[in-house]
Each structure stands twice: as structure tokens, then as C-alpha cells.
Length: 555
Image 1: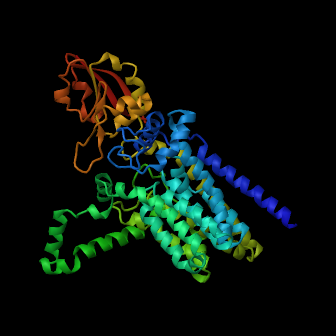
Image 2: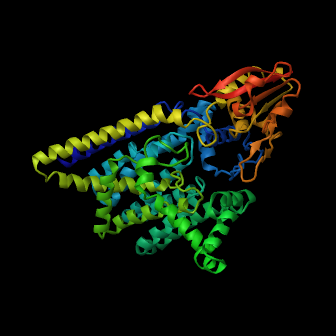
Image 3: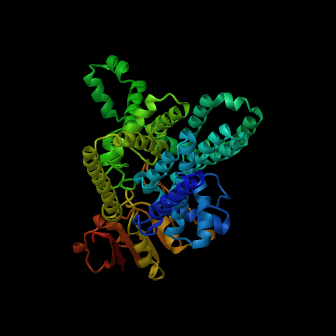
């Protein structure tokens, strides 16, 4: 087969892989995940606000940090949603489109990058295949979240960096642009990107310094992109986010400290073995190790329902031998580019390791890039060994492994589309199902009441009412107020028009006149309601037919 035919076949295979990846990211995108979570709704409404007024929900003009629900979001995802919302309107599809699109394009980028790193087309196609069907990548590229954007930019930056080393140093400008934009996408990347740039410089400093002009221009591009982030980084909101998310703001409970002092028979041994340095070092090491734990990665996954695929980890069981084979190859070879893949894998979970969560795949999303390349390397290695087996052994191993692949893929798709939505729909830790249905019911009768009080137990109701009512941003900006109902909690919108969002006190609030109370079932006993003060006029149900909200009319 001549070179032209080989290239033609390679392109056709890549198109097939890409088509599968696109299908898996766009199939039932508006319906699965089962509901918008409040991050998605917040991104979407702020993008809608930018589109209509050029300002965020609080009236800030083209901000570089979005106050949001008090979690101070990075801006890139909001601005990427603006054209999508302009074309398709404010809905689930338009909010999830940028992530699904850039998640799909990442399949092509990782193919190009792997081919540059390994000089092997088959390994490049394999890495693209693994990314196309990766449960970890699919979980987040099907939601309106910023991390697929971050990974796309990282893969792009590294690809053009390698291209600049091999072909033309002017490609370094694209690397600088992609890394610079990555700082605007997800907070973890503000830690990861400087580490990645440092690694690339150490490995390839001779090539960079031999083209000093291009290196200086690229450095200047990156620097200019970082300058606008300096003031927002030192803002009160950003500092609070860092303290509330990372171990920098974490202090062990006093009861835990006293127990350790008691066990250590005083403060001397406690100071030696349980001081802050030792305590936080072990905590970081423990969290870092979790990202290489087979239990978390292949079996149980994260505890957070929004990141969880019910019944499995973030990778398939059939990935495990391939991963081990790929790691064996990386440790065996002394090639600088293969060493880079290993270093990439080792630094990727560091931003997640310094946060409070034991296992948070969203913050370690940059691991996906090197993992897909390692899986491809492992597949190539094990296939070569497999091809040298006896025919009878080949048949047995082939049948077993084919069954394993079929089972894992079948279970994943069954879990993702059927099981997981029914296990992860509830509350702020899940996909916050019920708010869309609530808005549809309440919007029909909202003018009949002097006030509508919506309980905030499930968190974030105000942003759903703004989103699904497509409430005019210019009107909300004059009423926007963020309030906090508990220490360490995220904020809630206080209200707009005749809406009030706060915890409901049933004993007191049922005495209000002509008010609609939207209240979760654990705050009210329907059997002891009485008819002289209040009446249940409607209900919103979860997918399992459990009541999500009662709509209670007061007299």
C-alpha cells in the first residue's frame, strides 16, 4: 500500500473516531445530564446578561471575574456561551454546546499531539479513540462547565509547542495564547499552567534560547494575558474562593486537636509529629495518592453526585492493563518526549491535591491528556505481545478481553443514561432537578400573589427563575443582591419583583397573607396543614415520584 493510500485510510479512521466522539457528546445533550446544575445556570444567565447588556447579573461591565453565587467564576466560559445563546437562545443546549464542541475538538488535537510525541500514526489514532469514549471526559464535556475548555487549550498549547520545536518557532505564539487563555478558564489551571510551562522550559530550554526573539515575543504575549488577572486575583472574592476551596483555609476541628494531644501525652510530641507542616503535608500526599488509586479511578469514583457515574470509577476496567503497559513503557524508555508524558501525568493532579476534597476529578481533569496517550502506548505494546502468542492462547485471551470491553462499555452507557440520572438528581450536591418544573408552574400564577417565597434548602433557586423566565438582565441588575444564610455557604440571590429566596420558617410564614410558599417536604407536614391558614395547591416531583416541592397558598 503506497503512502497516499495509508494517509487516506488514516484520515478515514480519524473521521470515524471523531464522528463517534461527536455523537457521544451531543446525543440527548439537552436531557442528559438530567437537569442544569446551578453552575451551568449561572454561566448561562450571565452570558445572557452579557449578550443583552454587556454586563453581568450585578451590573459589572465585561468583568474578568463573575461574582455569581459568591464563588467568583472565571470569565472564559461565560463569554464562550454568548454566541451560542445568541444563536440558539437561553436553554440547556446552548449552555452545554461550548463544552461539547471543544470536548469533541479535543479528540482531533490529542491525535495531532500524540503523533508528534510518538511519531506513530497507530498510537495517535488509539489515543483519539480512548478520548472519544472516555467516561471521565464525557462526564464533563456533556455539561456546561469550563474544564473541557481548559483541557482543549492545554492540548492545543502543548501541540503547538512541540510543533514550534520541530518546525517553526513562530508556533510558540499560539502556545502562549492558548496557555494565556487557559488562565481565564478554570481556577486549577492557574496552578497547573505555570507548572507545565516550567516543565516545558526545563526539557527544551536549549531550543527555546536558540530562538531568543520568538521566545521573548511568546513570553510577552503570555505576560500581557496575565496582567488583567492580577487585580481580580487579589480581590476579596478570589481570596475567599481560594481559602474556602483549598487547604490554605482549612483548620482541623479543635476536638480533633485535643484528641491528638491526649494520645500524644501532651504538647511536646504533638508539636513534633502533628504540627501544621506534618499535618498538611500528609493531607496533601493522601489526596495526591487518591488520583492514582485503583479504587477511586476504576471502582467507586467520586462521592460528589455531579461528578459521579453510578457503579464505576472515572475509567473503564479494561483500561487497567493498558495503563500498566503504557507506564511500563514510559519507565523503560529514556526518550525525552515520553518522559514529558510521565511528568505531565504526575503534575496534573497537584492542583486537586491541595484542595479540601479527597477526590475531585473536575480539578484533576488535566490528567486525561497524558492518560489517553499512555493507554495508547500500552495498547500498542500489549498488542505486539499478543500477536506473538500461540493461536489457542490468542483465542482465549481475545474472547475474555472482548467480553470485558463489551461489558464495560455496555454498563457505562446504561449507567450514564439510565442509572446515574435516577441516582444523582437531587439537591445542590446533585443535578438539582425540579427547578425547571417549578419555574414552569410558578410563572403561570406568580401575579396572583403579593409575594412568592422560595425556600433555599436545595440552593440556588434564584438563578433558575432568572434563567428559565429569561428575566430581563437590565431589570435584575438594579435589584441584584447576594445574601449568605450560613458561614462557609455559597450565596443566594435575595429576590426580584415579588420573589423572595430565603429559608422558610413554616410556623411564622404560614401566617403571612396572600403569599405562595415554595417549600421542600421536610419542612412541612401536609397532614397537619389545616385549611384555615394555608393550602397545598400543587406539587413538583422528582423522577422517582418523591415530592421535591410543595406549593402552598396562604390566606
